[in-house]
Image (cartoon, rainbow, N blue to C red; front, side, top):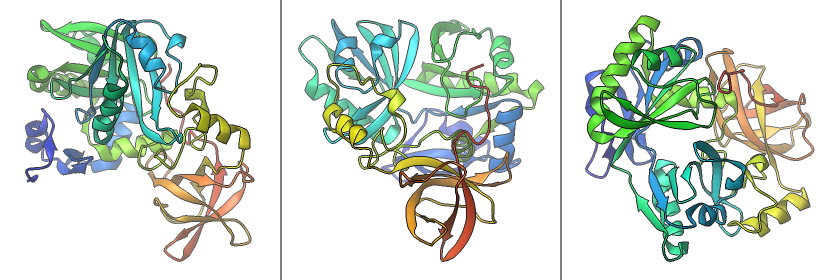
Length: 368
C-alpha cells in the first residue's frame, strides 16, 4: 500500500494483479520486479527477446506557440537546429552554474509544437523554469496525467508491435503518430536499455487495454513485464547516466562526459558560461566506467583508490551486471586516470579490484 502522498501510474492495478514488488521511485509507486525470475530474468528477456516497462512516472509537457523551438533552444544545452520535425533529441536543463536540473528528451513535432519528457522528480522544476522564462505567446503546458508511457524493448520489439498493427522500422531517435484500434498514440524510438525498442505514448484511458495487448503479443516470444530494477541494470551496462546519481546540480555535462549533448556554438543556453569555463579549465573529475575484477558489488558513494591507496574518485552508480556476471560501476575519477588502469573500490572497508573501462560494458542494439 502506498501512502496518500505517493503517486500511482495509470497501470498500477496491472502491476498489483501481476504480483509486482512495488517501491517508491521519485515519489511514485512503481514496479521494481515481478514474480517469475525477478531482475535477472527480466534483464535477460530484454537483452535476448523482449520486455515491457511501464514508465508513466516520466513527465510530459507541451511547449507551443510561435518561436517555441527557438525558445527551448535558448534554454536547453543541445542544439535543436540539428534535428528536423519527427526527430527526438537528448538534452539537458542546466542552472546558471552548469549543474544539471534534469536530462530529458525533446520531441520536435514542428517549430511551434514540441513534446518534452523529463524525469518524474524533476518535472515540476523544469516546467517552473520554462514558464518563468517563456515570452508572451509561448505556452508551457504540463500534460502529465493525460498520458501513459510504455517501453517495449528488445530484439523482438519490432515483431511485437507489428502484430498489433503499429509502425516499426523508423530510425533511432525518431517518432511517428499512429493508431491502435482507433486510438491515437505516438510511437517513439528512443529507449533507456541500449536495446532496439519503442516507447508508446498513449492517452491514460487507453493504457490498460494497450498494456494487455502488448503482454499478449509478447507471449510467442517469451517476453516479460519488467520493473525498474532491470531498467537500472540495463542502463548501467550501457553506461547511461541516471539523474541524481551520475548527473546532478553538482555533476555537470562536462563532468559526466556528455559534452556531445551540448551545442557549444549556440549563442546562448542556460549555464553556457559556466560550462564553457569548466570545459576550458580541464580540472574537474570525469565520469568513467569500472569493471570489477574481484568479488563484490560497487554502490554509489564508495571511494575509488589508486595503487597507492590514494582516493581518486567516487562511485556514482554501481550494480551487478546480469550479462557479465560481475560488478560494474560509473564513477567520477580524477582526470589523470586512464582507461585500463587498475584501481580498487572501498566496499565498507574491504578493497575490491576493478579496471577502468570505457562504457558500454555490453554492446546493445539500440541504434540498429
